[in-house]
Image 1: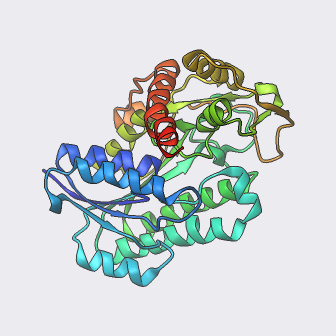
Image 2: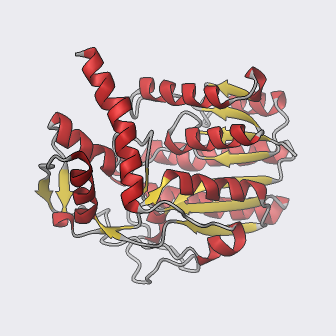
Image 3: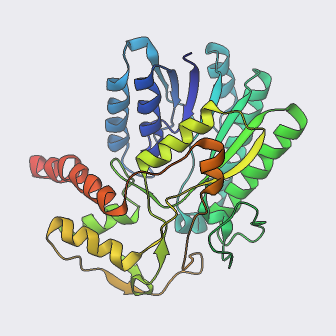
Length: 329
């Protein structure tokens, strides 16, 4: 039975992929995004075009350009659409950028989430899925990262804002019986990725000579997870009211950053010229997801290897970035 699902951040990286998946399978999607300038609004417009093209009928997808910090705008949206489930992917992302503007991160990631929870509560929405982050684990020494970790010592405003949003979700579950699942994403990459993400930045370095730091000589492990696998987990959570749950979505196979750079160099046939830099205080040496809970509760089963995912991302970058750049020169 098809549902009407609100996807916040629908013009973004993971949001656009999630909306496309839902539309293809027959759900109605209401997308909201403020199209801010954190990265190119033109890129977000292209993402939205992909979403619109996936709809079987014009009425299947509705886009609303509003900000989740605006309570009145959210009230109007929920009044106008009978929302079954909220998939909340809108956020200010990026660990390092959050240090420079912590107020914006809290207004968006925490107050924005509160606004959505309140709108969902007053309109009887029973299932709320939040995009959280592996950053909430901070400098934990528990490997792999397990959801039972208290995550009490976040080391950047972004991580703290997401951990606070997870806790706020428990409050709404406890008081209002709302199903709330927080999905902790691990280093997502793939087509339509953000320009501030490492995979994108490496390609920008190779083809446009843009300076990119290589922290700690690339001796940092990341649990790189392909966007299609992440979306499968998000949709599974949207389909399963679970009470209150915190669930890792990763691949469960950390790869050294230096090796990830090598994969991209081999795929493109060109060397990167990254600039050595010390690891920032807000960064960690390792991320590594225990995905046993996701397998058990969501049927989550990541399919795309890092090498295959890099190849898919490279093919997208060729068409979406290099071809457009050549066309505008």
